[in-house]
Image (cartoon, rainbow, N blue to C red):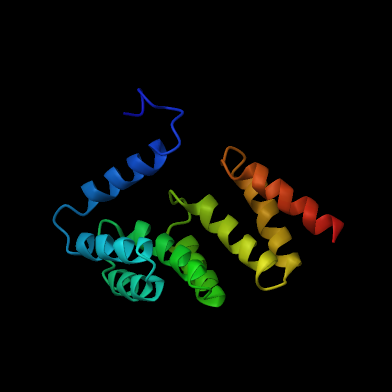
Length: 152
């Protein structure tokens, strides 16, 4: 699929989900992940958060990395800013070389800037993203935020 649609918008997302499915083939967390995603997309973010929090308790899961990062994302969607920050920090500690590390740093920086009015923390994180992950697809967005911080 990646060879056929390497520039397709959803290719990375599809490949990511296939990786997660493979990691949880004999793992009950797969059902929780599916239920959480279904709840999120049906508009019930609080239920989705509760389900994913339960899945995060299964630390032996092959999808633990996916669960931790998505829990942070779900918290952000639910306007639970501090919990989102803590979830990102946990993800960054447990998976310092993780697949979603650039997204986690970006998510924290965005929350610090947009929601918690802490531009100095956002600035530090956006700069970390630029220096440590120069090939991240989030680089241009980080630069835009850095310009906003600089001009504010």
